Image (cartoon, rainbow, N blue to C red; front, side, top):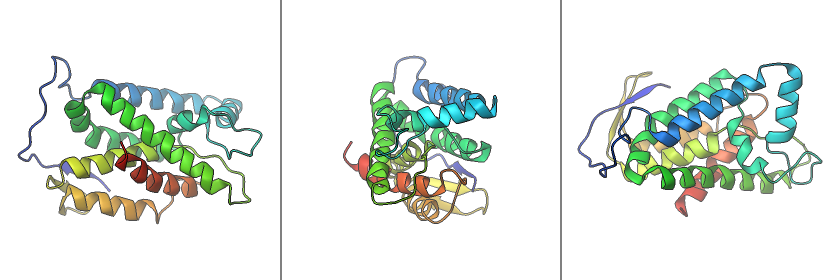
Length: 206
């Protein structure tokens, strides 16, 4: 699903010079960090296994679990499509939010959503017998989508495939339904659905 945002009547808080670029500061840093992490994943099979074992989020009872994984799992992705979809969505909907809130508040919000989604995933994993890693920025990205829908609910967004105009508040609901009914990659399909749902809960409290 591709989309573009139709310009509407809204006001962006004035920001110091340099904050109105096409790619705001925090989003640029996240795009670069996720891109570098994905490149590192594909250097070799050994590197991929090392990153997966140390940076992906493993169940709390697993021998692989470490506290920092509540943040680092958000920089790993199952495949190129997973990465591109998350980063495109982060840029498309996150840029106006970062301009409105400023870099510091935006970064705090994003990582609270990532960590909060990861924490809920740990709770869910405790009730399951399977041991599998969670990876992907979907928790943070869905938190951004929810914030966008709440901040600009009547902003019209034109889907390119199919070409249907839709208000932001309805698009967020659509993404939530699709995110919990489809898979992204063999490694993180189930965990990614959980992280999207829990990110919505976490973002409500930010």
